[in-house]
Image (cartoon, rainbow, N blue to C red; front, top):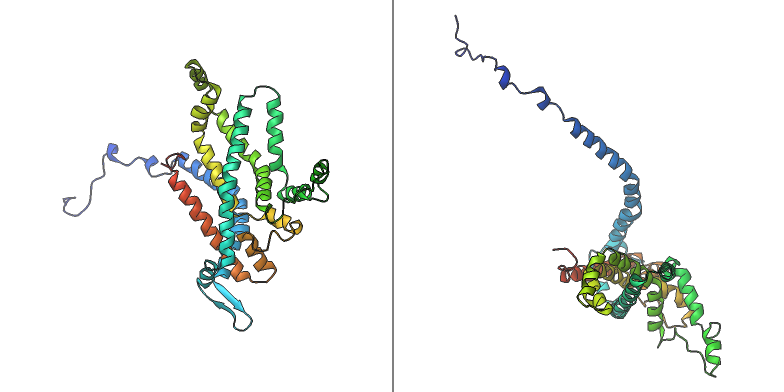
Length: 322
């Protein structure tokens, strides 16, 4: 009789040592999760397609254009970062960047202050006036930017606007708020009117998320209303304040619509290179310099990214990043 061990044959494993059949089959719950993931991709696919076609693809094409140069003599040729080097030494582009930086330094604190005060006041109102006030302050944001700019262009007009009869009552001429001396302040007023309501809603929502018992404890300790607002409410909504500050910073550095619309009635106060976006728009659609305009746009995007990242890094302890 032959020895099973010597011939290399193995005896069958005991029943209790065999691998259970369920271990080599797919878990039903795993199959269910996989099926749900597939359905999730199906729902995301339409948005992903639109996002890729109308954002990713145009950005990629614009970036490719920015790496090329087109001239009548040499045609189109690859220039690498030559357009970017020209952009960051272009005095018109640098003047526009400096203007929007100065604009941001004045506009953003003003917007923050107006929206914060409005939100704090509305947070203390308990009557029906609160709902009406929230709606009234938010309405300017619901107005399209182009229509709002046209409306302010009419209001600023010294000939047709309401300033003429008002100043006529005292025998004075109405000031032109879009003159070279006043256009900076006039644009700040338009943008503040347009966006303060939106920022107010963000701050108000953050205030409503605070536990009212904190206010009651502060009142028991003898805190007054202004102390509760400045020492409790404002510190507890610091993340919301940083959020709207980032939104305002990004939007201000890309300043375009309001000066572009008001340029027609500003009587030369707003030129074609007033802001970087206006400069890129003029280069592309007035002079057909699409390659250099693309480089200007991406150079501005780099400025916006660096500015936003630097701010988030400096405020990382308050914005919840660490």
